[in-house]
Amino acid sequence: VSTGIYLDSVETVSIKDSYWTSTFYVWFRWKGDKSLDPGKSFQLVDAKIEKKELQDSYTSPDGTNYQCYRVVAKMTKFFNTKLLPLEQHMLNIYIEDAALDDAKLEYVIDSASNISPSIQVPGFKVETYTQSSHPHTYQTTYGDPRIKDGDFTSYSQYNFALDIKRIGYGFYIKLFIGLFAGVLLTLGSFFVRPADTGPRYGIPSAAYFGAVGNTYMVNSIMPASGQFGLTDLV
Image: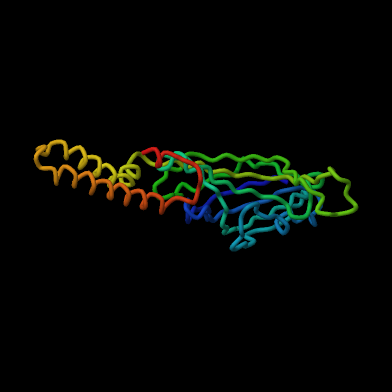
């Protein structure tokens, strides 16, 4: 089954809540058995379909079948925050058939896939997109006594990936401007006369609380994680 996606828009990218939402068109084209109906049984992996609408469907005289759907979906994505706020992410859409394994249905990528030139992701630059198709094996027999242990089922999986990259250093500066101000205040205390012990001790103390406040602000936009990244090092 020849399969492709036209990514129409990216509505939300939430790094803190580990998800992103989009609207896209997906189509299926195949020859032969019309009852195969891949549009009816396809599903998204690690995602929830909010809306699914059939846009077009036909069978041509030469036996070619075609279906096109408009889909609005919410995808789960655990973002890598090690390089935040200078990071790059890949937004993936994974499609599998819910009923037929890869012995009965195999997705073949369609070169007609594309992305809308009007796609914008606030704070990010849309770099490029890639697509691939490969078997996805589920390491279980689902408790079915008819299936031998180790005889796992594989399903053909189509993957559409959009690369996005943080734009410049603007977000980096905005994120740490309170910390930078605290550093400048601390350095400024060295220009106070040694006899003025109050300001020499008071300015670094105020700067410290400013740095702590900046840390709370940075952590508010990041998901819970035990890893240390760029923001922690800064």
